[in-house]
Length: 124
Image (tube, rainbow, N blue to C red; front, side):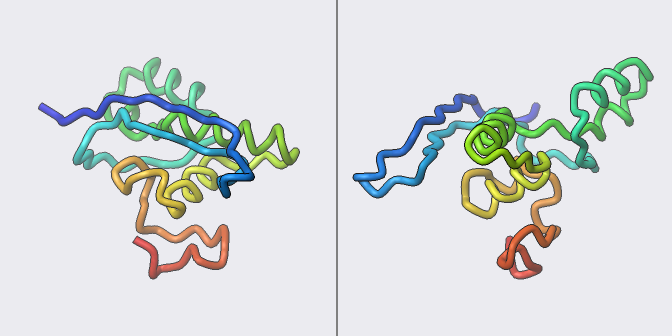
């Protein structure tokens, strides 16, 4: 049996007077440990998931990468504040580089994306 972690996401506005950033994420995780499935990034998570279900292909279903709900919430919060809609992969990668996600929660954590100056081969 796989090891599972319980998930809870709390996103709140930070206290600038206390030196907190604009958004503060207190998180716990729901994920399966030691997954060996090769995944791929997509912006059409729901569509890909249902297409994989409809195909009745276990292999195709296992390839669908569904980011943690934190990634969706943070992306929407960034969009609401800045008007910039980043890709799910970009937000997930940023959260990983900032220490908000563990390597087992991220699609290909050791592969640099080049989204910022410190997203290089040295990370991970």
